[in-house]
Length: 79
Image: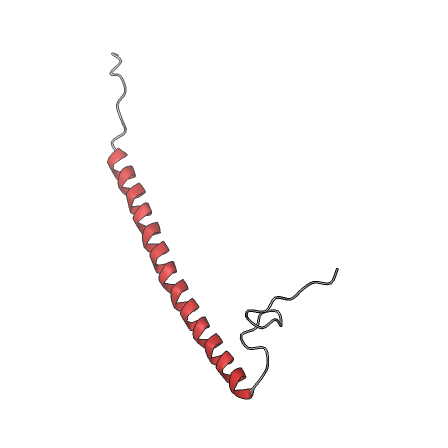
């Protein structure tokens, strides 16, 4: 029997198709996840804004402050 050299398997085209199909599916999944993530962040921000508005209406101090320090003010640490 003569050596015919390297002969690629007949399924290479199918394997490449599966590979690109998988990459396309992953891209689609990433885009779907991104859309869902952004929708969740938007909903969460809306709830946070409503919560802050209610607290401002009740006159609860500290709105707009971070760590109890009003904006523009610097807290000096004791030595």
